Length: 425
Image (cartoon, rainbow, N blue to C red; front, side, top):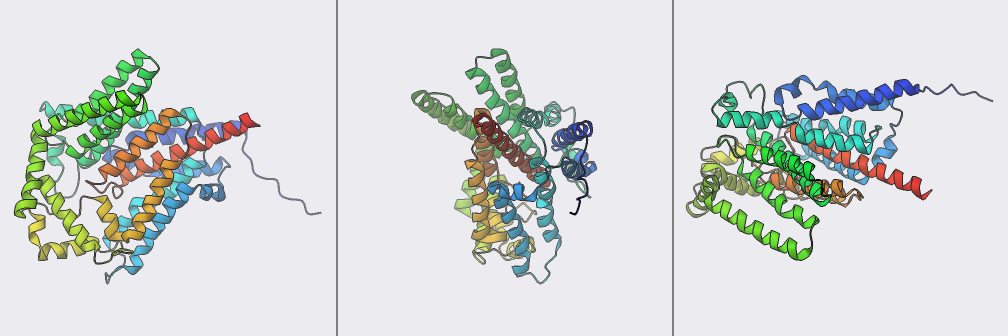
């Protein structure tokens, strides 16, 4: 009889400290995610999270790939990577190819590093709370900008790169939006439970984060404001009876209509879009976004089934701009400002359907916890809406946020399932 070598196991004490260190790494990464300079210094954290998960002894690839949400996301990512091989570009591995690969690469460390770890339900809720509190520094800078005390964005587009603290304000507003939504949800939760002290705190935090997106005209993103209003309409429907919900819905629509008609930035955006449609002059924020959408859809029609790949979309857009300069007035960015269109151009309708399947399976994930279920729906809807205005899957900070969001929800669902199995047994 052949004796097997003894299996390597860690003592309970060592396992405990590795678990705590793993949790600490997640906390640090979640806290620094909105801050560009700190994130660039802390790229080691995803590797640390992955390696620590290995030591916890639960790392089974089969368990990972049994999860349909993760599997569908990985299929979409690999399809995106493979698209480089059918690109019409003469050069396959361009700078744009590198960008296309970089945006998803953290998925292969963070998703298994979180999904196969030993997080608890309490720790996951804590991480969601910490993630919502993380942009407080951004909010503070926005208020200081409005008071004229700091001008953090005055040096944003200097030769050689971004601010040492913040990336583009659209990304910062992305994080502020999610903080506003999270504390808005917590406000309704505490109201339903009649916990009025918590309600006061959560409402205050909601207002702090929401108004930080409005106080400084340089940094205000109309898209994030509209996204918050969208969630503000949806959230009450989870808590109240149908008749009252209908009244609140109608009141919200009236409020948003008044806001759009009275707000100077909104009116300027609508004016430039109207001018673009009537006079074929694509100026201003909304005007050139409409022009880019027309360009993107025109390029998409050239390769509608599997796209033109990730290696030369920008090059094709520059060529299109030279042939049709009217669509690019006042903007040298040469990208579509729309992740849905960008995805269609890169990977066609096949790739877009793969992404849609991933989103469908994520939303279908059964969660018994009422708050986590609402977080799942509201954050996902907001993310899809925000993708209409920017490439949020392309920016690694916002893509990393999405990885956290998905992984935490899936772990939470697994914990609920395990708990139910114990009760049934």
